[in-house]
Image 1: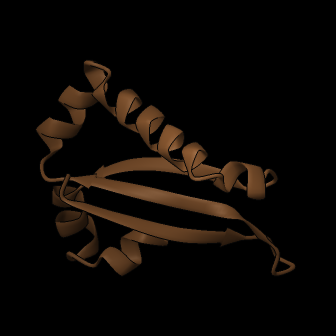
Image 2: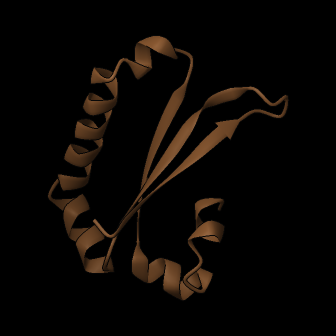
Length: 89
């Protein structure tokens, strides 16, 4: 794992509806390989399990959690290395 970012999500009325977690890997080949062999799915499941164990999902049952994977190479190539811009895309 190269980097982890979190983005709060809200609707047009300012209500908090959940968040997005972005997990960045270093290289494109890692992302493709991990997707093909099911490692990304396992990471997502482990993350959701950990969140559930904290009681977050019981406290905020209406919140949605989105897990995304990307690569550092993509941020460098398409966002000039700016994670702030990529996280909001």
